[in-house]
Length: 178
Image 1 (cartoon, rainbow, N blue to C red):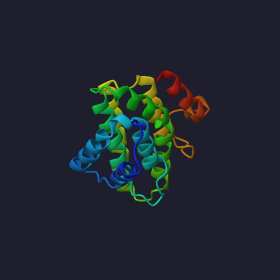
Image 2 (image 1 turned 90 degrees about the vertical axis):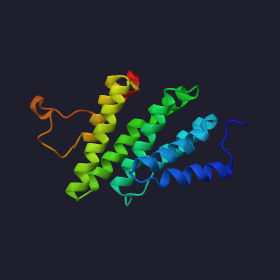
Image 3 (image 1 turned 180 degrees about the horizontal axis):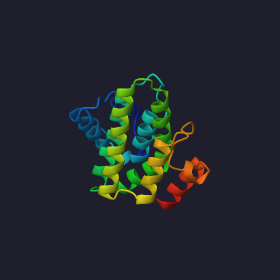
C-alpha cells in the first residue's frame, strides 16, 4: 500500500520525533521530515501521538514541549496542503490525551522554574492554535482545561461553585466541539 510508511521510513520518523530539542531549527527539520511522508499521514500521526503520549516519565519538560511544538508545526503547515485535513483530524482525535499526558508530567515535576517555563510554552501553543483557527475555540479551551486542571488545588476557578469540573466531560465536550 503506497499510503503506508515502510519500516525504514517509520524508524526514521520515529527517531526524528524523539530527538527534537526546543530550538526552532530542530523542530522545523523534524516537521519537514514528517511532511516528506505526508502521503502516509495516519502513520506519521501515530508516531507523533506515541512521541508525546507514551514517552517515559523521565523525559524532560523541554523535550515534551519540543514535541508539542513539532505537532503544532505539522498542524500549521497542514493548513496549506492537500493532506492537511488528514493530519488535522487525526491529531485532533488524540490531542486531549496528549494534553493530559503533558499535565501529568507537569504535576510530577518538582523544579518550579522548569514547570513555569513549560506551562508558558503549552499556553503559548494553545493560544497560537486559537489565533490560527486550527480548531474551534471550545475544543482549545477544553485542551487548556485538561492541561491546567489540578484536582489537588482547592483554589481553582471552579471552587466558588462548590464542585470540581468533570475532566472526562470536558474532554467529551472538546471532542464534540471539534
